[in-house]
Structure formats: C-alpha cells, structure tokens
Length: 176
Picture 1 (cartoon, rainbow, N blue to C red):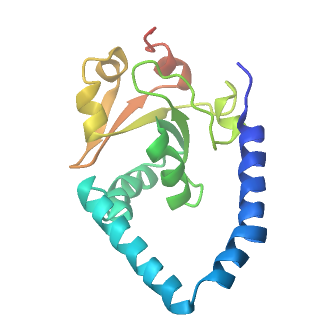
Picture 2: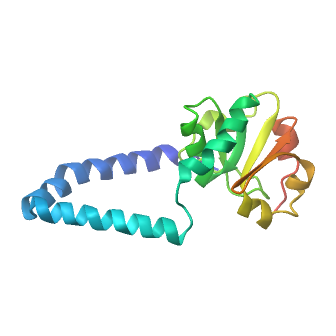
C-alpha cells in the first residue's frame, strides 16, 4: 500500500496557506472586533459542550497518570489507536514514541500523521506496549492480542499491555 501521508500533509499545508492569505483577511475586513470576539466566545462554548457530550473533559489530566507510568517504567515504544498515539508521544516530548494502529484486533498500521520510521520492522528492538482506552479494551476484550499480552496498568481511562517484542505483538493480529 502506498503511503499517502506526504500528499495529505502537502494538501493541509496548502489549505492552511490559502486560509491565512485569503480567508482571514476577508473576515477581518468584513467583521468588527466585537463580532469576532463574540464568535470566539461561541466557539469556546461549543467546544466545552462537545467535551461534556463526549466525556472529553480534562484530556491531558486523564493522560498524565498513564504517561507517568510509561515513563517511570522506562518504556520507549508502543502502539495505540490514532486518537491516543500522537498526543501521548507529544505529551512526553517524544520520550515515549507511540505508533498509530487502526484497531487492537487487526493491528493494521495507521500511518497518518505518524513518523514512517515507527513502521519499519527494525526501528525498535525490545519490549513494546499496547495502550488502549478502557472502552477499547472492553470492546476488543476477546481479541487474541489482549489475551496474549500482560496487563501492566489499568485506571479509569487507560489500559497498558506488554509484549516481548514488536514481532510478538504483531503475531497476534487477526485477519479481517
């Protein structure tokens, strides 16, 4: 499968440049400072409502305990689903690198916005972890990969499983 990440990155950069060059100046010319301030206030309200609706409040706060665990135990590399992998890597300033996967059953790589090196078989040698939300761990609880891993950590939000190597983890992938 062809890695389309560079193309998507270029398109996103182009869109951002166009918005910066044309949309923002247009909005500034056609609205007052008060209208822009009111709009931003409504955006903040909408974001807060969405966080409450989807139970996403205090995201970094929820992540700090599992991050502390991973760093304390000296873990350097693992896997998680898209919505957790990149943010966890960022919150550790890259000390813990986490590659994206589609789901914990197929373990198919999800290379979007993730360094290509993470998916090279020789990139990391040694133990790897699988980080899941408690919802993912419940949903995929009967998956072969979860039954084969050693559960090292669990709190109200996250579960961490340990595997001896990337090869061991990937050997438990299930066909779809």
